[in-house]
Structure formats: structure tokens, C-alpha cells
Image 1 (cartoon, rainbow, N blue to C red):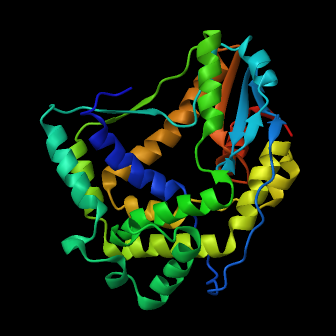
Image 2 (cartoon, one colour):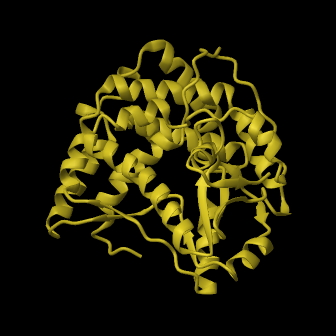
Length: 329
């Protein structure tokens, strides 16, 4: 567990990044009527989807695709993963760890910036920031999903978007946490399997925080608008993806839309050149780790979000074009 002084910088950066990663834009405007998606009824033990096998010259990387959100009460059956880990030389997480380097007194500056970043300038309410039609849609969702949340109207748009998104998942019996990766890494530690530890080093966290606090308001409003649209239209497909993952139905996962969930909100935070570089570096580091594992390990287990794996430009297609054999569900 990090020391109490450290998380201010990490949380400030990663909360905004996770806000971006959790939402998707939809080009079709939605009506104010909010369709009621049925709850996800997935409880008990489920295996999830089968793994893909990427191989060359006797070396193999087994790739487990993850999906978020997932059903809250699903218990993932991990017998196959345990068996694989018994013969695995390395596990490659989907996302690297984050390291920040700074003098301890910088933590105070980061904390001050983070406090400033949470609310709009001069603490004006969200209603004064958003266009009236968008605020009406936002308020309708808030009334349905978080009627007792008084603080949400004081948050800046990108953080209000994240908060509303989390409330929507909770009301739909879903969780945004990546419990699949957490479980795999815990099992790897139990089995003594090394975990590949790429680290994104944020050399000047104060500069990164300052860039994030200066995100243009128009970009934040676009992010919130995309979240509102998704929550008006996409709760059903989100639940369908969660159910399909739990049941191991990869055919259905392929048919369901896998748009880039980060599109509009990631564009907002990517106004920071340093954040944009960190995201690009993380994606490149994952591919580099897989290629190195295919050259040096007999067997490797890697994790990657399903929406990045599938499709003509997905990771699996890239590995095929690089000459590797890709087999799977």
C-alpha cells in the first residue's frame, strides 16, 4: 500500500484517465426517455471466455481478454488459469504500474492542484457550465441513478461524468472494477510466477496535474455529453457484454459493438501531451513485452481488454500480420 503522502498525485492523474477509459461516444443523439435495462442475472461460478494462443517456434503466449463492467455477483471459475499458471514463466498485465518521482514537498502542491481540479472555476455549479439541453438530460439521469447525490452538481464536467457512470453501473448490478486482472495477478503470486513489471514513470507530476487542470471546458463538456448519450442508449449492450464474457460466448462478444470506449473523454485528457505520451507508451510497452515473451519464454499468460483484442485493427490482428500464429475461440 502506498504511503499516505503519495496517492495525491497518482489518484489525481489516474482518476481523470479512468474517467476517459470508462466511457464511449455515440454519434446518435438520444431522447430524454430513459430505457430501463433489466438487471444482469449472473451469479455462481463461470469460466469466462477461452483464451487465445499466439505462437511461433514452440513459444506461446496465452491471451485472456477482459471486459469491464462485469456482473457484481459473478464468481469467476479459475481452474483453467491455475493449471496454465503451473506451466507459465511470466504474466503480462494489461496495464503497467505507475511510478512518480518527486521531492516529498511536491505532494503538497499536487494535493492543492487536485483539490482545485475537482470543481469548476469559482465553484460555479454544473448547471451554469453545461448547455441547457445537455443539463436537462444529465439531470434526468441523475434523478434516476443518484437522486441523493448533492455533490455531483459541484464537480467539473469530466468528473461528474465519471461519477454518473459509476452510479449507472451500480444501479444495473454491474461493477467497473477489473477484478479479472486482480485475480490473475493474485494467483500468479501464489504460484510464484513472475509478473512483468513495466512502469510508466511520471517524471514531473506537477506539470501533468497542471495540464490536466487546464483541460478546455469544451472538451470536458463533450466528454460528459458522450457519457450521457451512452447511459441513455448503451446500458443494455453493456449488460450483454458482461453476460457474454461470464458465459464464455466469444461469438456474441464479436457481434456486439466494441467501439473505442475512451474516444471522446480520452481526447479531452489527451490535450495533455504528457498524458497522451503515457497512454501511447503503455500500449507500445504491452506489445513489446508480448513479442519478447514469444522469443524468450516457453509459455506466457497475458491480459488485454477485449475491445483492444478484437477487430481488423485489434491486437490479435496485429500479431497475425507480424507473422505469429493466432488460435482461439
